[in-house]
Image 1 (cartoon, rainbow, N blue to C red):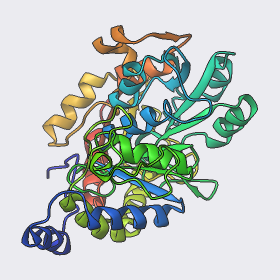
Image 2 (cartoon, rainbow, N blue to C red):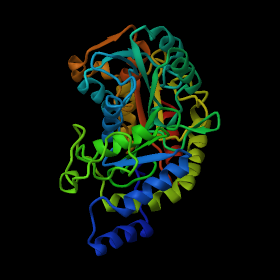
Image 3 (cartoon, rainbow, N blue to C red):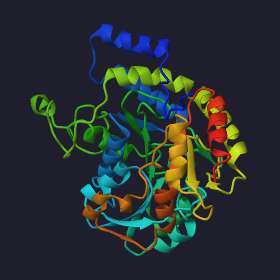
Length: 387
């Protein structure tokens, strides 16, 4: 039996949506993208959505927009707080826009912020907290929101791994000023490549629409607050107002995204049933640390940390998995501070003990939007007698 990391979510309806776009001969960003954005915002209960070509681009555009808002914009040299564990492109825009990053350790039981460490990290220079719900498990939004309100901080929510998760009844990816999602092949829904940003702030919405699209005025609403239109139509057709990018999605991405979004509740239901089976096997196994749900996880995958006190080693466990044809990989991107790229960051970090344990002793196996309880049985049987 092969237990893989990913599983395609495409069906005949998705393929037909792609064929319909091909037959229309209209591929650049248009009505399907607009309709996906409207449906995505409605699904999660926010006002505005901006679709882009990846979750990484979503982080880039969302962060960039915070530098161009009229009141209290971010500036190079400002301090932001981020967790030690996330995917690399959570951090890269922070470095690329010249921010000072204050890294905070994680809680081993959730892989999200250690709340005590987060509170200690706040300084009079802090301007923003980046929240990340790791691998489906909701971030401690109550603590983050309270700190943002107390210290007047921007809340940037990277929800790329946790579409459909909930905390205290609210969807993750809806609590921040800007909130990012990924629709990559292996994520909760797939548009092949793709991402989306949600916001309730109209100015941020307009800024992000310009930034994804060359920084020009085309695609701006009539009442956009970010520029004043002139009467020179010839100039207005190619008028650039922001130092933007081209990170637009195409109609193929929008069309298949609309169909995939309809299936998200079903996908989440199956993922959670698989997770219940996994947790039942390993919740009392002292050899491994597995996630404690903080709210209602979307269960991207099944992270496992080999308990350093168990006598087991990760190489031994991974060799058993490899022999059993069970795929595995590092938890998200591991501790970013243990990667070579961190030498390019302007950062401080008071502690990364738990992030180092997760990096050095952790791995994850896949969860899929289909019933894989037999594969989880295979995982359990492979690991139950090793010691």
